[in-house]
Image (cartoon, rainbow, N blue to C red; front, side, top):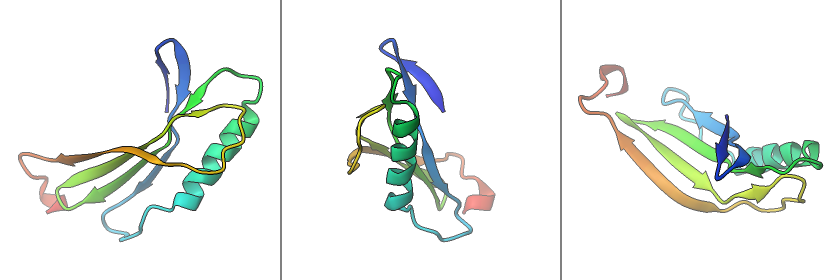
Length: 95
């Protein structure tokens, strides 16, 4: 996803997992994606804010990682905040 935040182009690479797969979020994949995007945007003023989204019973969990500058060497990522979403009324397929 791409958006503009405070006048700066911001990319939101997303690592997502479905409820049925029982997979866990892979931090190495998120970091690798951020490194690839950053390397490809060396001459661009942009921010990168990775997101991890996981389906859970009747909801989703979202992790918002700290902002990275495009073109910089990114060696670590840190979760800045988490968001838990519950569906009301419940979605039957997710119950």
